[in-house]
Image 1 (cartoon, rainbow, N blue to C red):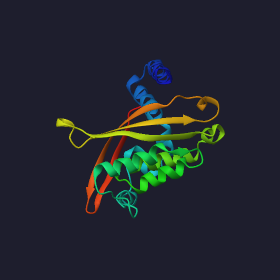
Image 2 (cartoon, rainbow, N blue to C red):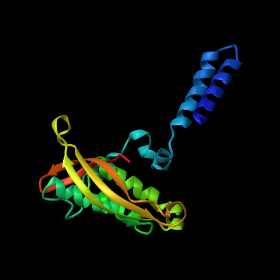
Image 3 (spheres, one colour):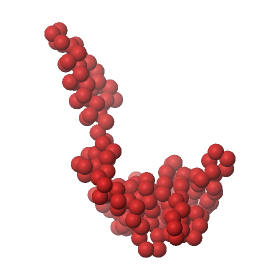
Image 4 (cartoon, rainbow, N blue to C red):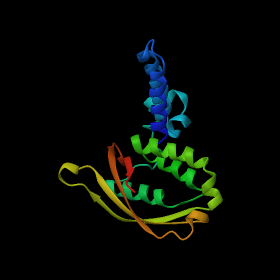
Length: 194
């Protein structure tokens, strides 16, 4: 709704001048597009990483694994990642995400690092004393065109105070991928669906 108002305002501002409406509209549109597409995640990213770019030094760090990060098979890598992903408290949420980053690569690592940063600054978690506990219900490898993609189902119970009090246990579905490394498997993509 805010985007519609900004665009409408930009179009009206573009129509106000008769001398060169295209130049005015173009300048307003640039401002509207850049502010409308700037998400909170983009704003909190370090300046060199905004707009989807990652400096070479940071990119190199995305491929370094912690000792013991690799698992002997894809299922073991996914099960360990999922257990850590679903079991956390307000006090441990950011640290849990940093542990996930240490045992993953690629998109999964980048997502965990971003979550760690966001959770470290989330006063609602602490105020509401949020606790999440869960278990893996199933892990299955995709078939046919989905070969190489994994589906993980977890059962989770989130509790706490305020909005988090009395929530029922729920099933969650996650799509994931693993990467085979020289010494084992690691999670490289993690996409919660609900």
